[in-house]
Image 1 (tube, helix red, strand yellow):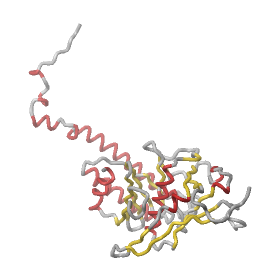
Image 2 (cartoon, rainbow over the protein chains, first blue to last red):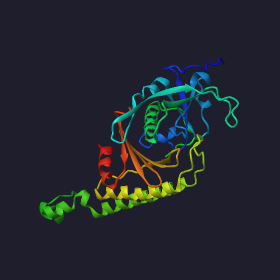
Image 3 (cartoon, helix red, strand yellow):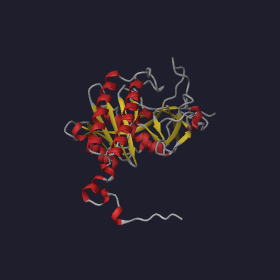
Image 4 (cartoon, one colour):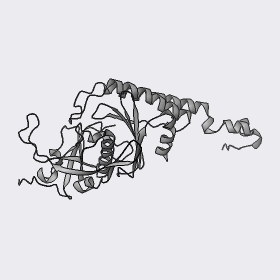
Length: 155
Length: 161
């Protein structure tokens, strides 16, 4: 496999593993919860399809997880993110980026050269804007449905 | 062959007076209301059990490093669940159970979907905040704020609109 670790192109497909309990299909359609994009560093992880042989099962962390996909373009189009000041006036604008973040020889994590992160530039000052980013990612990723179904359905 | 006939003079009394007809309406049927109330109460108990079960989630429950749900946030969510439920049932609106999960910070998260509308509520140890979502655009298609008891019904009506 040829390694391409540079810029993530707009048309690249990204995979995200979704834990059991972070989705519902109660009304017939897949609905990811915003918590499907939880991340303590506010930089949710994805894998680049072109660097894992377009095999979404590569991204699945546990058998009960499902895997969804989204494109780098759809993530970057979550644009003009604004954080309001205490008077409700727009204060900061963010660009949403998809950055290669290959993992190699990490103390804990296994090697994963397909790894990339979704992040805001500059970093979010408040958690409320990150919450909205998670809402947006969940909505976009839900539209494509599963690329790998979880082995146990969530309620 | 037996043929049933309907005689206007033998119709049950409740169909002959306007007041009884009013009482016979579906929304005034005490049995129906009682059954619905019992079902909703069962649903509430089930949700409280789900909230309690969050306490059993370990650190890194989602494999991305999220914190164990905060017990104070769970307690706050239980209190708010009862308030939200009461407001909706008292207003005779249809109750819908939320999806329950937790954030990376250990907050409890309630989520409801209705067509394109989505309502998310985050419960921390001592606060509750909502996000209304009607599209993917963060600036133009989302709104957020502090949850207050007085605002519950308007959020619920928006969700159902």
